[in-house]
Length: 237
Image (cartoon, rainbow, N blue to C red; front, side):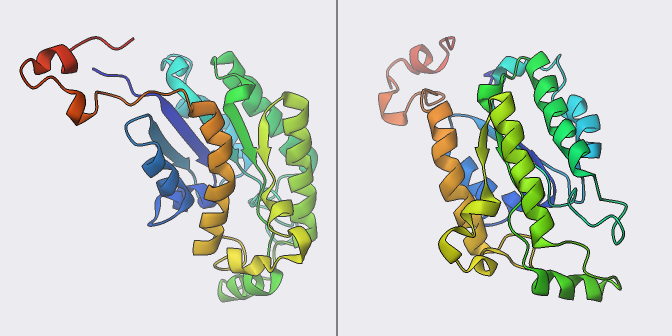
């Protein structure tokens, strides 16, 4: 069996939805086809408190982790929920920070080194649009963009301390007074433009890590038609 290298996308609903048509995960998978598998391990509604518990079940130490060439960790949009309005998902910022560090440390013990990890901060929150979503569910506005920004800053600090790359969506989407609500479909999740934004910024970071990956199995025109076994059945390095 040919072993494909793997990129694991680990996160909350923004990652779970990443394989929808034209979303950021499916776009990355298309760019990496025949070089590695892109696995979606997005868990809608999850916070880092739950993520750190399930991560060893998603990437166990016994699963040949040397085949994992990159992991994205994309949490915070739920952790930053206001405790008084959404205690089910809220995680205090200090715990959020420690949970991210815990996951990075676990991956290191599974031979997924920090240079293979990319942390992604939550995107900014458009409060008017998200408040409408909250009202339809019979609750008050349960997140604030200013609080989301504090969690994004904490995520960046963890990356700097632990030696991982980081994609600071919260800052980039609001850079130079950009009209960031166009990147969001409901105030929290990504719109088509938001998906394009994430993919366009994440791809260069992944490309640096994965540029040396060869095409798996020969290009069709390179197969020896008189002796295809020599091309197709040779052991991979």
